[in-house]
Image (cartoon, rainbow, N blue to C red):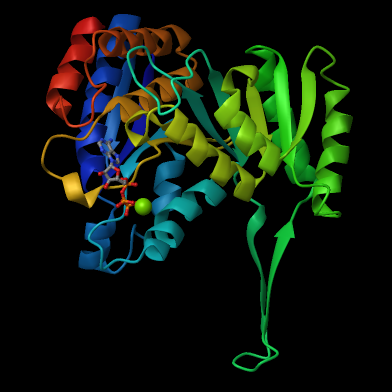
Length: 346
Ligand code: ATP
Ligand code: MG
C-alpha cells in the first residue's frame, strides 16, 4: 500500500487539539482511499523552548526533510516566549529551509457559515509570496537616538522570485477558473512594483488562456469586501498577501475556517500545512476550538500529496456538516463533536 510519511508538529495550546482532529480525519480519508499515512509526532513548541532553550533541535530541519509533508498545529504559548522566538526558531527555518515560496489560502464561505458580509458565492485562492519582498529583513537605522534618526526597510524582489510565484499562480488559475489578479502598488512604489508588473506581463504570455488583471493593494482590499465573487486567484507580495489574507479570513467567517499551506511547488523539499489561527491561549484545553480550519488544511495536504479524491471527500464531509449547522456558531459545538460529525460524514 502507498504510504506517506507525515511529520506532525502539534505545537502549543489549541494547536494540539486541532491537530488530533485533523489527523483522525486524514487517516480516515486515507483508509477509504486505499493509502496509508504514517505520522511521527514532534513536540517542538514554545513549551519545548522553555524546557530546552530552542524551538527544535539543531538537526531539526534535516530530520523534517525526510518526510513527504509537514503538518503544524500552532505555536505561540506560553506568552513569556516572544513571537519572534517561534517565528525565527521554527516557522521561518522551515519555510526558508524548504523553499516554501508559495503561501496559499483558500477563502470561501462554507455552506451554513455566516460571514460578516452575507456575500456568498465567492471562491478565492490567495497566493502570497513567502520568501522575499517587504519581509526581506534588509535595512537598518542610522543616527540612532538623535533628532535625525532614520530607519530604512528595504524590500527585495528578485526576477527568479517573482517569476516563480507568478508561474505558480498561473498554474493554479489554470486548474480553477482561469482568472488571475496581480496585486501591487506600482503607482507609488516605482521600482519593485513596476518590476513585478513587468515580470507578470512576461509570464502571462505563456498562459494566454488565463485572464490577468492588475490591482493596486488599496483597490483590491475594497474589492475583496465589495465584490469577492468577481475574484479567482490573487497573487501578492509578502506584505500585501499578509494583509489580504486577513481580509479573506474575516469574510469567510473567521479564524475557525481559515486554512493554509506553505508550498514548495518544485517538490524539492516537503511542504507544510497549518490552520491560520494561533495557539489561542484563551480557549486552550477547553475542548472548544473549531477544528474545521485544521481539517481543511489537512485536505490541502492530501491534495498536495496527489490524493485528490481523498481531499475532495474531506471537503465534502466538512461542507455537509456545516450545511447542517454543525461548527457554524462560535462556541456552540465542541471540538470533539465537530470531529466526530466530519468522520461520520466521511
Ligand atoms: P498566538 O499567540 O499563538 O498567535 P493568538 O492569541 O494570536 O495566538 P489566535 O489563535 O491567532 O490567538 O486567535 C485569536 C483568537 O481567535 C483566539 O484567542 C480565539 O479566541 C479565537 N480563535 C482562534 N482560532 C480559533 C478556533 N479554531 N476556534 C475557535 N476560536 C478560535
Ligand atoms: Mg497571534
